[in-house]
Image (tube, rainbow, N blue to C red; front, side, top):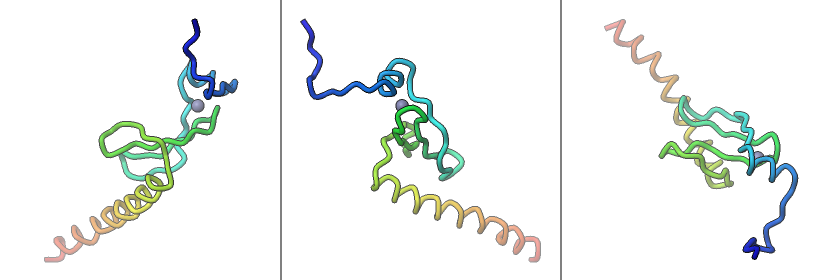
Length: 89
Ligand SMILES: [Zn+2]
């Protein structure tokens, strides 16, 4: 007896991904540890979360990543003038 949900639709790419796993490529680098990825087979988008797991990329997480990337870049940029100031003291 089959217990599969009738709502589930199987596409070839979806089947490929569920069998072999998603083929993710990095679409955006957020920080040194956090990236956004897209599956080249089914187009599923995920992101590294703060907990180190992969999370589905929603408009909310995308927005969060944007502000995180912004914050990270500012932090990285700030590192240079601080050491420069110290050198001048
Ligand atoms: Zn996939």
